[in-house]
Length: 453
Ligand code: SAH
Ligand code: SF4
Ligand code: F3S
Image (cartoon, rainbow, N blue to C red; front, side, top):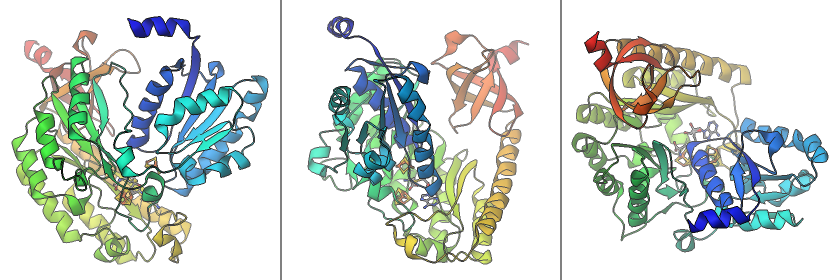
């Protein structure tokens, strides 16, 4: 009630928020929207209406970074036509570039780094008064643990919950440790309290989020480890399912595998990026595990949860990757049988260890490898979806499909299913019989309907 009165006094301003990059950024964007709502900004998906345009950016590959500069150039005209329109950049490119962004882009009003989300309302208020700010200072872990912003807006069936941030792994190709800073785990009590509140507001599934969730609690003697946290989350009333991402194979352990055997609410889905199937390349990448270790984890996971859907990330064309190394990657894919795979061409990033290595492969050779790999995976994914036809699986109904004539939801294995049904089912678990498998989704019918027919 109090909040509503306060909101009535502040004129509504519109925020257009564009998110690039990983789920961490998607989750940060939710927090940004929640933080800026407190100073009167409502989200809009129409840029022309916006009073503030924010780009939440990614710098994981060179192309992602170039896209940001290209995007920013598009707003020159718009800012000229609409004086007072504010333009800001946050996320990983902002962290990497800092003040340089303000120098390079004269029509840019504000820049905020990955540790500075909690300061955004003040930064925006300053920009409204004509001050151009770039706040990108990293904050030490002892302070940061008290500064995890949350998206406390009610709503949604599935939600992200950040459990840790940052990364200490320094994979030799990766910019993330430089733009996200050191690993810091959130207090378990706060995580559980946030999820409890979400459950009270109708949320049914949560995804625990971190760059490397397996090392949750590793630096905090008073907190449980990740397996302990999963056990706490599985007790929260109202939460029907939970999943987590991302896991690092070097920290993936038996205690976690045991969770898949013992916790029925833990989804049958594991995102376990291998990055390569060759020991020589894995060593060059500083990944800290071998092909054999990775495959043994997968075997144990499948034993603990036979229907588990395994997804991953793969990089092709890392410096020194031979044809034999690449063949090893393809054979690892064959052994694992990924449900889905995110694959990328190696892209040297400034400041990383691998950026100093010479690349022997041309762009065309890298692209050829990537296309071959993606073609194999596309066929594998489709085959798995087709093989599910005739099976019945539980689907958490998330909403009405874009076309408006069907409901959609996901299985425990994270497969998207479309089916006809009453929108009143949104937020409930239903049994769906799969009738057709496509590349990226399945078609189904409600199992009660098909039994009645
Ligand atoms: N923390 C997660 C995700 C990191 S970034 C993890 O460790 O798995 C997401 C993916 O981008 C990585 O898994 C990797 O496959 C890819 N990636 C990271 N740096 C890259 C680079 N320099 N070139 C190409 N792909 C890269
Ligand atoms: Fe990057 Fe490796 Fe950390 Fe993942 S684990 S964010 S790939 S450094
Ligand atoms: Fe990109 Fe930053 Fe995520 S670099 S992949 S948005 S952590």
